[in-house]
Every structure is written in C-alpha cells, then in structure tokens.
Length: 277
Image (cartoon, rainbow, N blue to C red; front, side):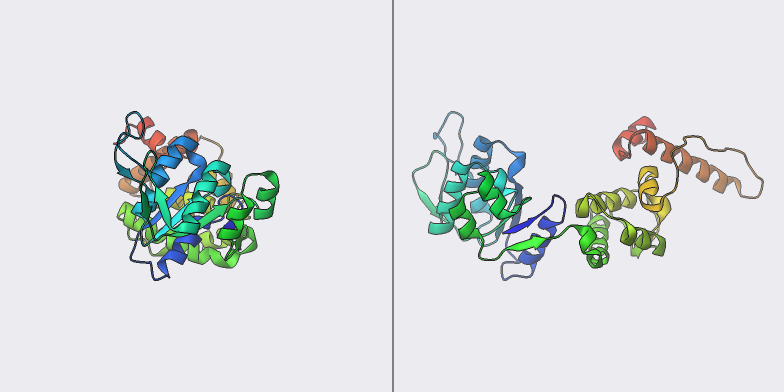
C-alpha cells in the first residue's frame, strides 16, 4: 500500500517495484479507481459474462489480463465499500468471478494499491475497509511531497526525458544547468505530475539534445525562472546584424510563444490557432 499527496509519483514508484521484481516480464496494468463510476469499474476489473445482463459480452477483466503480473489500483480509497469487499475476496482466495458469471477463475496477480490520504484517516472517514487495509498493508510506503525529496529530481528528469524521447522520437540527452537549478529551487506544489507536464511540453519544442529555458512555455518560464513574459508585445524591428533566416526564425518563435501564452500552454490549441497541422 502506497500513500501520499496527489501527484507525488506513486504510479512511477509502483512501476519501479514491478520492473525490479520477478514479474517484470509480465503485464503492469494501472487503473485510476476515482476516474470511473462503480458499475463500470466492477466490469473493468472483474470482466463480464455474456448474458449476465443486458448487452453483456464475454470479456476478461483487468485481473485476468494482469495474470502473473501487477495490477495497480490507484486511489483505492475512492472505490466503494461494496467493491472493496469483492477485492478483499480476491486477495484472500486468489479467484475472481466475472460480473454476471457463476464460475470462479483463479488469478495470480500482485496488487499495489495507492491512496492520497493516510490509511488510518481513510478508515476513520469510512473510505477504506479496515480488513482490506490489513490485507494490503504487508508493506506500507509513504511517498513524501517532491519538495521534501529534491534529491530525486535528477532521476525523475532522466525518466521523463527517456519516456518522451520514445514517444516523440526525440534525441534529448539532458537539461541545461539553468533548468536544473530552477527545478531544484522550485517547491513543486503539483509534485511529480507537475514536473512531468513541464518536461512533456518542453520536449515538444526542443530540436537539439539539451532542454533549455527557452523550450518551456512562457507560463512555465515565469513560474520556474521568474522571467516576466506576461506582455504579448514584441519588437519586430530588424537590426541588420543577423541573417534574414535567423531574423525570420526569431519572429516565428515569438509568434508561437505568443500563441502558447494565449492558449494557457495548450500545445494543441495553439497549433489550431496558428493553423499548424
């Protein structure tokens, strides 16, 4: 059971546990229990049986799909008490029953659960069953806010750069010293999730091997580097000291920055505004 503030990196930590275990070559499947209504969540977790209810089809749930691997139940304290009781049965007996089914199906799944509140507080508030907590709490791990473990920041940077290198087909090696200093000085109220979003946005803008301050949106630059970029006005005057190509590139960059600023850093919205496909 892993608990900590929203955005502290509980899923990242859970994935690391899976990757270092003897289940690493099996599935790792995360699901946010808070993002789905109870009726839908039950079918997704346990699967459904054809004829079990109107429109039902034979479909394996996440427990079956994660067989041999790890299932991450994010924000388990948002799961209904009734559904928590069904989860407890899986942990105790090692079997699941599809919604509408009558057959028990054995599963071998490691369960990692996360909560954004301290477990005893969740029990006191009635959002977590005490018996489920005792079943899950073989190991309890508290993930502190990022501001209290800034020594982890360089590793998170490497992880996110690798992730977005793969996703965006980039070849970024590292961040500049200026960016690293800013990251280490910032208090990260949004925790690891905030950092991940910042790096994702900058990876869309970089062409070279190093992430620099200029690759972040104006809003992020104001936040991290204390640069006042709130004015949408910029000088288009040509100083005759730069090549025309460099001059045009600078204008294009300023126009893109202005579009990002007006769209609150939303890259897709800015691209639509500029009619970039």
